[in-house]
Image 1: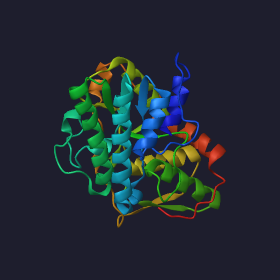
Image 2: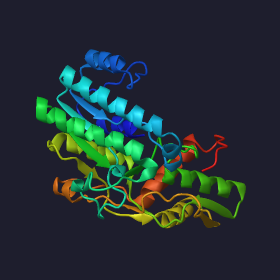
Image 3: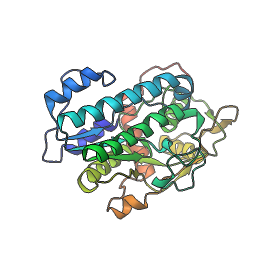
Image 4: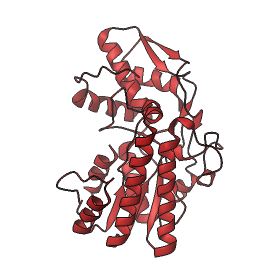
Length: 301
């Protein structure tokens, strides 16, 4: 999702976008180094990762920590070896402590225990941040880290067994309307607060920071606005035209109670998001109808 948005955004820049002719397994050190040596990019946006929602993180912790550690180690080290001029490492808002101060400033990192349901992914991303800092200190590499909030938009994962909250809700509510059901069951209490950034806004922010930021401290990338999962479901329902009711299954985990990024540093650097949540949801639903709606997925979430 993020990679495709970056390609769309970079099409407006005077640059050549380098992509491998065949899939490269970034978990394999030799494969990663061989491809970067052959392509010798000037700038690397490191958007590749194994991602998923609470269910996927909770049931596959080994996959999430190993794959993301391997990707970060291989890409960052290979970029240093081939002389990449700028690297932008993408983290995630889940790197912050479960009970971090709200909104979460960049300095809150490592200030307390992580959310247990996604700590494996978070630990790998924290390691990537520190790799960038270490290579900057030891080798002078202009490697920066950016922490996007929850992303959504074209190219999202709508598989109910592995997706994040927003695309899972969009799919479940769409299917409830299509099937004529008057009730949708949603994981958790509906009370947690979340922040959402449209993926094309994210891509624009990443390009902006690549041009205008060079420092060791990571930068939060978000909107500075939050919404409860309950209100998010209602908003998606309006976009889809669903008039049924929502039932919240409190036996399922909520995850972190609140995740709002402090974006004051980002705003001070001169960048703000452009796409509102409702506008972004309309765009996402249009993409879903064109690309996903006819698929059959039997897994529940």
